[in-house]
Amino acid sequence: MFDQLQNMMSTPQAREMVFKMIAQQVAQAPPERREALSRVTVTLEKTERGMHLEVSRSDDPQVEEVISGAIANWTDMLSRGFQSMGFKVEIIE
Image (cartoon, one colour):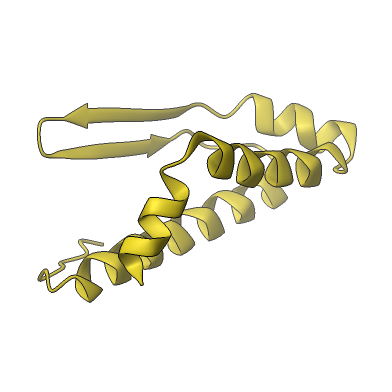
């Protein structure tokens, strides 16, 4: 099943659909929230066998909640995906 999900998300069309849905949700946010989101920098460092993610802080408490939720959800999804393939997963807090 994870292979199917991975294959489905590997197509540019599927990814585009997901990102359009996200963008539509963000577009419905108040202007001050969109402005606060635009001030947050997300840095992804791609390494040979991994990556490092860093997200800057926001002065908006609701944006901070979005950041915390997104990191928790992506961590859960990635860890469960790797676990379902049989890998040992360690999450460092």
